[in-house]
Length: 447
Image (tube, rainbow, N blue to C red; front, side):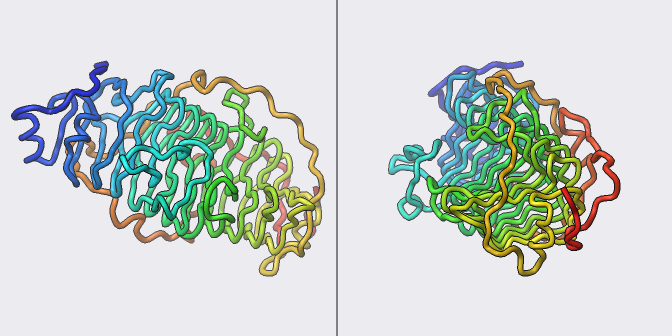
């Protein structure tokens, strides 16, 4: 496989002129590095990258550029455990597709509106510093699709202070925080669909990601925590509100051979921490050793008016656990038509019927076993080969505008255990047989 190390090289002569006329810049045929190509690209151009291992960090500052690999598994941007980010997008309408980003100290792909006056990354946008979105307006329009993000020290694919975007058909593993992350957007107008996240500390995180935020038909398995929807004071737009999580497989999130989760989370399928007005429906949640779904507070932020409807949650330590704190007791959270065997408290379904939900109350304590030690993110097992973007070498560039388009979350069906299993390192596992589950609207299920 070709390995390219050139930095600061540019296009010259007929290559530069020809690339401009075609609207396609080929790497390395017309540009020696990906960065040289994107620096030369005009709005709407396609940067088409041939197979090779590229030892560079790429920053896209030009709007509506499409960066695409000709082969998802053989076009690799490798941070070598030394560089911070693989691809950074700070311009609107950019699409990153059909390539692999691996071995970065922070992020595989970062899409953000947090840029300083020199088009650099604003200090703190790649960590946990609260930045003012009024000073740094959200980036509008992005797409990350058919991207494999492996062994990155913070996030695999990270959309922060960005809106009107799509993450689709991506694979994320070996992330020391989360494989996929959407944060600080309101309204988001973001669709996360058809992705696989496994062997991460957390599969997916949506922090202060509010309004028209859809997480549909993904596979979050064999992480420490499958996915979270949460509020966080270190980002703008507190509290989080109004996400839809539907049609996902969230299973077997008890994987010790992963980076440790910062808060010690382990064995949890879906965690809602201080989230409000979220719709959790038609998900298959099984094999999570601590809990399938957890409703919890964070600091003084309570879980409020979350709807947990028509999920299959069986074979977990406890299928649905209500863990609001005394400091921030929850209110109005409701359960309906879920197939479960156990809840905490045992009479949760009776006191949290839809539409009114539960009275303002705290939850009972939950016995928690310490999480096992983790492994360094660079040591996580590499993923299997992933499916290609159709017609990657010939399809025209389609900038990321007008996204996400019409989204119909009600059409996200209850998945089978084999959803996207062909793209996973782990085989599909069926929910264990525990006898017939009970529906939560009856109010008589026991722990």
